[in-house]
Length: 175
Image (cartoon, rainbow, N blue to C red; front, side, top):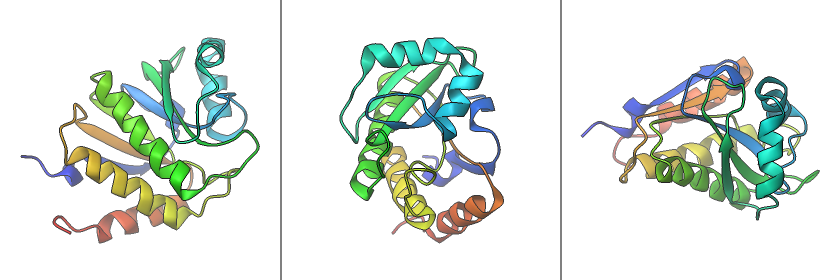
């Protein structure tokens, strides 16, 4: 069986340009596409994504909802609600929304997904702890039965990339 680590790629780039089955939006529980990652998705993906969000939302913090990808290269957007609109992300919201994003991908039989560093922008969650929590959840998911063959973590800048790469390197195969 292929190691979970072999399915994970960490890179710097533009999440909205990722060529995967689904990208993950760092969402609020009202599913309103505001600034940051959500704003980039709205700008590039077009109005159909927000229109679908309006039909689905609000959802509880920690939940994840899936929409079409509009004009994005990705076919779907999974909206990981780690906070209330205008609020901050906490560890439970981050952990649960990451886990539920992975579950939505599995339920929809997706093979590839790309995540940002959820909650680290305007929602104020610390980058180091974000890397630890997200990688723990990704590892747990990929070590179980999953349709996912590729998980990308697409980071906006070099400092975030360094934090995630260092954290990934510290996660051993069997611990």
